[in-house]
Amino acid sequence: MRTDLVSEPGDAHRPNEDFAGVGLPASGQGGCVIVLDGVTPPRGETGCLHSVPWFTARLGGALTELTVSGRDLTLPEILSRAIGRTAEAHARTCELSHPRTPQATVALARWSADTVEYLVLSDAALLLQAPDGTVTPVLDDRLDRIPRPALATEALVDATLRNKEGGFFTAAADPSVAGRAVAGTVARREVHALAALTDGATRWTEKFREGDWQALFEVVAKEGARSLVDRVRELETADREERAFLRRSKTHDDATVVYAEL
Picture 1 (cartoon, rainbow, N blue to C red):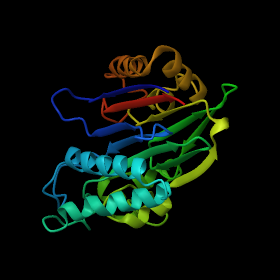
Picture 2 (tube, rainbow, N blue to C red):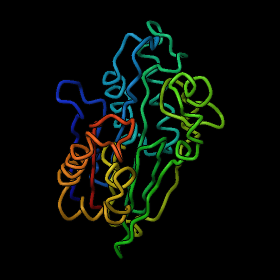
Picture 3 (cartoon, helix red, strand yellow):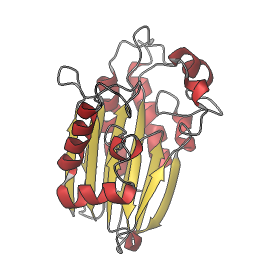
Picture 4 (tube, one colour):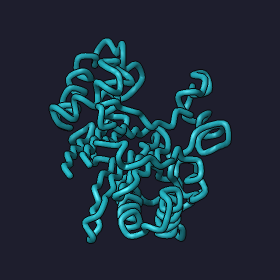
């Protein structure tokens, strides 16, 4: 197995809110890839004493341990337990029902000799490459399907859409949202390689329209994860003033790419 991992903060003066990990069981059979994108809250009260990096580090750590050791658990079950375990770590000090309690998007894959399991929650992305080179994206597109006027303000999103029916879901403090994730299983023989990315890296395709998912995957596979992140940074910098593509988005976002050849 060959892996390539890059995780870079959007601002060198702020902590990286992403989490990335690759797990290999002691048996040497199979492995897993985990990517989290911590959701940056707006200024103001969140009900929590802890930072987003604190949350993603604990959720990511729990996911890594459970994904590697819990072979009898499905990925939704693993995510549910990891969310619950993380919530317990600060339930006594923080108001976890607050809509802006620390939370993250998730891309998770686990493989054995026979199968590749996958799970995506919110706008992280998982790309599966078949032996013939065809790339299949695994996406949770609920946020993309919401009408733009419904996303006009953070307050409106929090009140009507965030972790609510008819809106979109993230890994926050409610273990039941794991059942909302896009999840499934394919035969191991159908997957040659995979890539998990946060939306700071998928900007190359989703925001700047430089190429489709197939083209993005080929950049990572042939040039490396660093090359994709560097390309995104160049595009962000070029659009800093006109904002023809960035619009209201932050100029630079945390960007994480994990690539694995099985």
